[in-house]
Length: 552
Image (tube, rainbow, N blue to C red):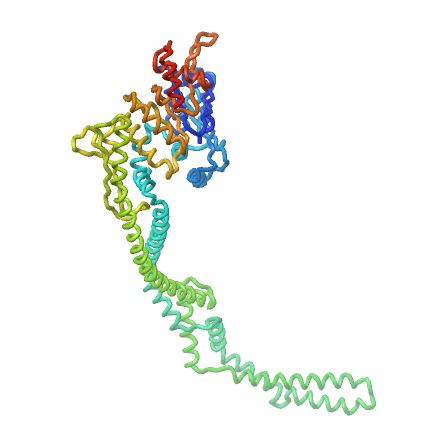
C-alpha cells in the first residue's frame, strides 16, 4: 500500500506530499491543473526513463519518493530477497535526477538499476496504462483471474508443487545424463588403465624393494667374496682370528689368579671372542641369502621395468602413488555405474510424476472450463453497466505443454462492436475501454487475488450518467479489498471516495504557477462535486445533487 508520495522539483511542482488512505482515493481538478504531472512523477519511481526537461529549477535535483507498507505483501518480500535487498515493513523507493541528466534509484537507501526498480515496483503499483499488456501477456493475469473466480487456489498450489518437483527431477536427469555422456567417453580408457594396474598387482613399496634387490644381485659376486674372506679370516687359515682370541683368553685366565688386575682384561677378550664368533655366524647367514640365480634376476628386472613404465605413464613417483591412482580409477568407474543406476531410477520417477502432473492439470482444465460460462455472463453484464453495451466478452482455453499454470493458456477475447469477430483483448480494446474492462475483471477477482495499489487515470472517460455511477460502484467495491487511486472528471465517481484530493494551480509571490494538492473536507468535497456537475458557480440544485451523490 502506498502510504506517502513526495515530489520535489518536478515540472511545475516545487514540493508536494500526498498521503492516500487504504481504500478509494479520488483525485480531481481542472484540466491542466497537474494531475497528469503527478502521475508522471509517480512513473519515475516505477522505473520510467527520465527527461531532464522536467527539472525547472536547474540548481536543485528532482526527487520522487514513495513510502510503501509491504508488511502484508509476501510476493514483494520474496522479490526483495531475490534482489539481495534488505527488508523493512516500510519500503522507501526513491528516484533522483540531477540537472546533468544523471539518474539514480534507491530501494531502502540501496542503489538499484532501473530494471530492478521496474521489476520491484510492478509488485507495488499498477497503473492502468501499463496493465493491459504486462498483466495480460507477462504476468499470467488472465489465468490467475480465472482461477481466482473458480476458487482454484489450493488446486493450483498443489499443481505448482508437483510441477516444480517434476522440473527438479527432469533437471537432475539431464545433469546425470550429461555427466554419463562425458564419463562414458573416458570410461573405456579408464578401464584399460585400471586393468593394467590390476594385472600388474603391485604391493605397497614393491617397486622400490625390487629395485634395491636387483641392485644387490648385480654385485653378488663381490659381496660373496667379501663375506667369505671376512669369515675365513675369523675361522679358517693358518692363524684364524677366533682361534687366536681363544688362545689369548685361555692364557690370560692362567695368570689372572696371581694378578687379579688382569681379570677385567681377560673378560673383555672373552667378550670380543664371543661377539666375533657371532659375527662370523651372521656373515655365513648373509652369504646364504645372496643369490646368483639368473632367473630370479630376470623376474626382478621385469617387475622393475613394468613399474618404471607405469610410474612414467601416470606421472607417479613411487608405488604408493600408483596404488592411489588405481583406487581413484576404481572409484570413478564405480561412480559411472552409480550414475547409470541413478538415471534409471530418476527416469522411472519422472514418468510417475509426469502422469500425476497431467492428471492434476486435466482437473484444473476441467474446473476452468466450468467457470468460463459464468465469467463470460457476468463480464458481459458489467460491460453494459460501464457503458459498453455493444461489447461482447469471451474466454478461450488453448492446450499447451505443462507450465507453472497447467496445460492451458487463457485468452480473454473481445468483440467491441457485435461484429461476430473476437480478438485478443489487448488488441481489440481502446485505452479507455481497456481500463473499464480491467476494472470489471478486477472487481470480480478482488476478494480472491492479491493486487498492488491500483491507479486508474480517467477510467470513466466517455461515460456519464448511470454508466459513470456503475464505474464508481465498481471502484468502491474494489477498494474494500485493495488500495485504489483514481483520477476522474465524473461526479458519480468522485462521490464514492474515502479520501478526496483536489489538484490546483497556485501563483506564488513571483507569480509563477505551481501545482498543489489538498485533501478536501466534507463541505469542500460537496462543493467540488457540485462544480463538476454545474460549473464553477454551481446552482443549489447542483449542490443538492452533490449531497445526494455523497450520501448514496
